[in-house]
Image (cartoon, rainbow, N blue to C red; front, top):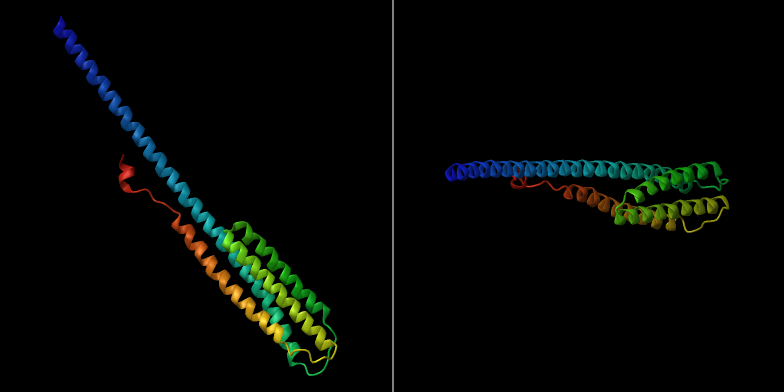
Length: 193
């Protein structure tokens, strides 16, 4: 009877041990699946974040470019004139509206971040604002038949705008590349557990 009892306890121990091992294996498999799912979600979120940032940056740069092109064209026309002409308020208002569009697109960039890009976008908006004002001031000088400075301050502001745009582009590129660096793929050894 003792032998039967010992055999029974041995079989029961083996069954319980196998059940424990099976449960532990299942638990590890579930944890591994959870990690894979979490990693997939992280990767998808980072892709989504990068795409949103890229779209915001591109929209901002396009709006800035449109305002800058119109502002430059107006300045070139003013410099080409030999006689005073009345101040073209309609043209100035159109340039101002494009500037406001760029400023609004800049707000989206500020929201999307990161902080360095947000700051660079604000600097770029400030620089364009200064440039638009300098062209307006030059237009007033031309309308008043004054010789003024020949547009030297406009040229300086334009060069400052170009430098700010270059800085923004570098920071935006880093931010977009940085998002990709944050994607962490679990090593295959962790997935096997």
